[in-house]
Length: 213
Image (cartoon, rainbow, N blue to C red; front, side, top):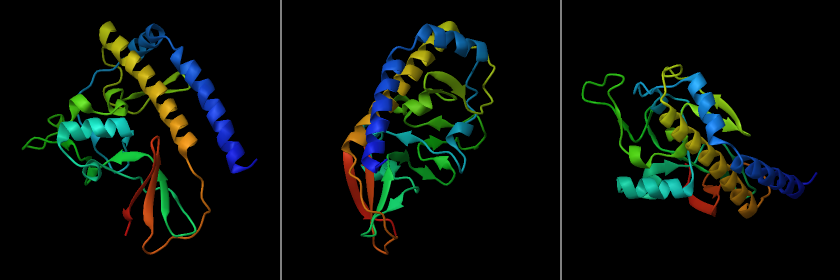
């Protein structure tokens, strides 16, 4: 199958996934969250770590910029995974929150620097992936990441709100993926170029950034 054929098939499947996600029951999901249990311990471990990578969509970036008073590339950056085109330009997908060392740029520890004593400086505008951690949906099936807060007591109202946000996140992720694929323009693959620019593909189209070097 050609690349265009593969993309058409991906879009078709995504629309089917979208219909399924929009039909999910928050009540059913809420009961499952209560069975698993979760209570945030404010340890900050989900905000730190070399492997932590927070995907953000364009509308989330703008919300963060408004809250933090920053410019686009002060808050986010393109991922390092991607492909080169024949002109030596690097192509990648979506955006990630910037990091400072091993921590999210927006996570601040107190003066004493103890675990559990940090704060998110964009908490009210944090991305969906953060507000639903450690849970996530994969085609409607609830999963969870490693977290010390799992198993904690969770109130029904809290579980219901988490379920609603998880469904919103699933629907948003699918819609963003559809928009990205529909706007995506394929390219001939090539080798890395010394002064190649970085081209980020997202749900709003292509964004050409200065050289990655």
